[in-house]
Image 1 (cartoon, rainbow, N blue to C red):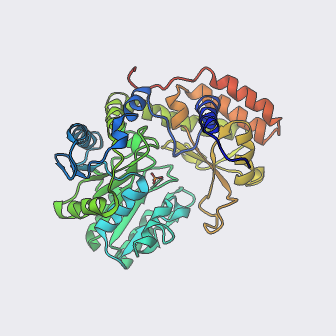
Image 2: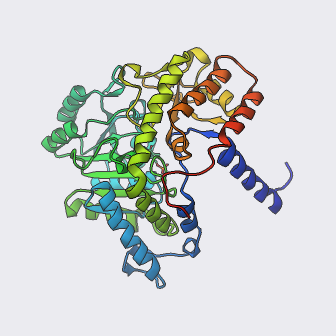
Image 3: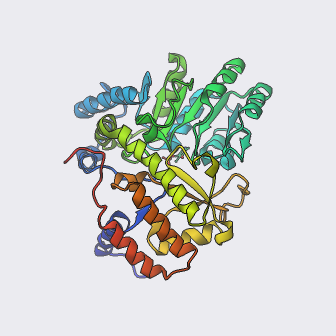
Length: 417
Ligand SMILES: *Cc1c(COP(=O)(O)O)cnc(C)c1O
């Protein structure tokens, strides 16, 4: 390969903008697009600066503008998510989990999480953040029929194992998790309850999924760029007594974050203001679209999970594609037609062998932001059938996808520029 030149860098960036930005059906459940106004607020001098510490208590000079923006973002985040505490400094959801887990536990403590097969993120596992922190990990029980946490089994596990920290929420999450039920069991054994809202933060902001704090969670961690359409980053929200919150904050800074990537903060403020104004409509349509896509795919012969329960109450649906060649083959074939989604482990798969899992995970949040509704979901399902079932020419389907996408180029549910 020839050495890369400066023209090549910009050419590839422009290709990305054209390809993924304007010509694909983007359905990776952890992605989204910022609004034009949030993007405008994102690129600024703030991306060159430092402001260690908290608003108005910094270790660097020159921070008066970030003080004003960050303190406002903290207040607005508390309002939008119904929390009493908020910290926007974690630079990703994984860092948010690292800070929260370490603030709430000590080395050798026991964490009970759903586990990757039950939808958890890798950060809740021994091979992820939890293991890095020296936590022991046990898994809650999962009910494959309901495609949700098995409440009774899990609660007896909490009583028996007496974990120090219990987590709910996940990367694969079709239905609200049993926060209320877990919360009483956690209180009995003195465990803290953490809700990882990375995937569903935008649905929570729009009050269309579940309300972890009203249901009894102590802490919520999240990414700010999945269903919540902010800049890539993390957030920790709290509803807990000051001692625990203080420990978590100390793990964020000076523990894990020095520079908190200040240019995220004004973009987050715009995204929060937009969530206040448009977030309910966006979240409602996202869930409707997910259910419509599930129904349309099933009608065309795909094996969509949880069909007896309306497929989903979140932005995600899961499809078992073992009969269609497996997750790896199907996701790869669809990519050639500009239909971008990911292969995913389903509850019965071996988590140690994630390369060719049974399933696809599909998210409708970004298509929804681009203005698509239920009738477009039917068309998306048909395009998928052409590739996966009919084995149509992928280049021909790609041309159709590009044509279909042409009418959906504007971000909706946001302020004008
Ligand atoms: C994506 C995700 C994370 C990690 O977030 P990043 O921002 O990618 O670091 C943590 N928890 C859950 C449940 C996730 O889905």
